[in-house]
Each structure stands twice: as structure tokens, then as C-alpha cells.
Image (tube, rainbow, N blue to C red; front, side, top):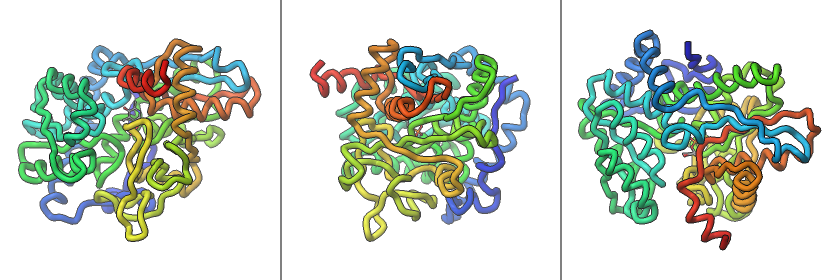
Length: 402
Ligand SMILES: *Cc1c(COP(=O)(O)O)cnc(C)c1O
């Protein structure tokens, strides 16, 4: 039987939607009611053995779970042993499919006809479009016109999968506007649609829902690691954008006090350059962003700062409430890696192990390579390899002049 579910320490409070002081529920009465319906349906669904059976069957036969753990022998020659949890081998190439299948199953169970989502680089859009095709729901993906021009292969994938890609043409025409447009469309039709968020961010119940579905990564990994090596890793490492793949793997290790949990944020062109990184937990301050309380990079007036990363999946000014809480109670530690370190890790993993990683995941790899040098050969670092790098190959060839 599949293991899934959250450690009570990171389940938001049912009344307030808070984890510690972070997160929260919507005030707007229409949305408050809609969010409560989603939350109640979710809690009911995850108690239903028929749901769990179907969810497991789809992950076993469609996603390709369980994803293996691989010992990277070549990268482990100068210190600690490095292992990868291979979420890059999932159908559609990343961890996002884990929660997209869950969210679409929830929407379908609630009798919704359509799922609505936004996408930046198109990764969440493709995973949503895939899950909607699989389960027979309509799918509207809002995407800024600037991103549509930049991310053409993903736009084509979504269209082939039968999703409607709806161009957003106001403001900067990127992710922030796409979120606004998607949310507006959802509010206009809360009865027959469900908003499906792309990470462990936003108001309750989204952080809980997404982290629940992603928790499958950590439960698998903990069991696999123990079975293969007779112990647990010393460190579990994951990149952090909104924080879903990191929560997914951290959750199962929260009670293992000897296991260090390390989230790696994008330092971009340098932490000292305003607007040229997206290290929300490293340099952000507390406040309200997009309907939830979190650490986020902000200007003096509280407006979100411009953010940047070489990995478009990581360039969000805020971060999920569960990570903010884990930082404050010091159960997890948050580090960062620059674009340059990320590219270096991307090339090393490709050439020394034959695995082309996503640029997002390469941040976690970069930290692991750095840390491995400081440790002995009996020290074990488990990295969540959140996705594969097919989407990044043209960019890297151009950037490095290969
Ligand atoms: C979207 C994405 C991320 C960032 O999202 P999180 O919610 O922080 O996990 C990381 N890796 C890959 C491969 C992605 O597609």
C-alpha cells in the first residue's frame, strides 16, 4: 500500500489555515466559501480507500512510480556520497505530475468540469494539461504573452494535450499577470471550475493539498534509502522555488532529528544584486503576498521585489508557509546557489553521470557538490532531482557556447 500523508507539524491549522504564523485563509466571502468546499472535499477524499487505490494505480502505471534512488559514484569521489531521488524520470519529466493528478482527481470528484491554472515557463501548465487529458476534464491555462513567445515548445505541448492556452496581454505579460487573470476567471465561475495551483503556495487549502500529494516522494525515498543502505541519509537536499518538491521530500524525514534538511534557493547573479536573485527565505521579510503570510522579497513599501533566476521555475518572490515555519523553528536550513554554480552542476551531472538535470534541480546538485567536499566518504547526501533538463538544452548550449 502506498505511503502518503503529512507530518502533523506541517499540517495547517483547520480554523486559521496557519502553520506557525504563516499561510492563512481568504477573507473575501465568495472565495472563502469556495476554498472551504475544496478543503472539505480534499479531507473527505483522502480518507476514501477507493481514491487511494485509484491514485496509486495511476502513479504506478502512468507516472512510473516509484522513482528510483541512484548512487552517483562519479560525483562522490571527492568526499561525501551523493544520491539522487529520480523525479526526473516521471512521466512529463518532473515532480509536478504528482500533485497535478491529485488536484484533477479532486476537481473531478467535486463535479467540476474544468481546471484553471496559470503557468510561467509552462511546466505547471503541461503537467496540468496532462492530468486533465488523463482524467477527462477541460483545462484552461493562463500564460503571459511574453512567456508564450519564450516557451514555445511547452505551449505546443499544452495545445496538443487539448488544453486552452489563454494569452494574458496586460502589465508585464508574465507570471504575475497570469496568476491575476487565472484567479479572475476562477472567481467568475467557482461552481463549475477549480483553481489548481502549481506549488505549496497561496491561501489555504492549497499548501496542504499540494504538499500532501508531493509527500509521496519522501515516503518512498526514506523507505528505499533504508532498504538499500541500512541507514538514513545525513542530509536531504532540494531546490526551493515555491517549495513543493522540497516539502515533498522533507516531510517524511521531519521526525528524524539526525537528518539535516536543506533547501537551496536561487542566488542568480549574486545575493548582493537587488532584483537579480530569488532567495526569498535567505533575504526576504515577513508579510502578505498573494493571499498568504510568508517570507518574501520586498521593497520598502511592501511591494514584491523583482526577482530573477536562470531557472524560470524558481523565480518567485515568496515561498510556501511550511518552509517559512521550518526555517523559524530551525528544522530546515536554507542555502543558495548562483547561476554559475548551477550551470557548472548541470554540466557535471550530464558529463559525469549521463543525467541532464533541470536547471531548477541543478541548484540542489550545486549545493550537494559544494557540501560533499567538506565531508568524509561515509557522509550521505540525498538530493531530490526534481526534473529533467530537456526543456533547458537550447538555452544551455547558447549560454555556454557548447
Ligand atoms: C517547477 C519546478 C521547480 C520549482 O517548484 P517547487 O514548487 O519549488 O518544487 C523545481 N524543479 C522543477 C523541475 C520544476 O519544474
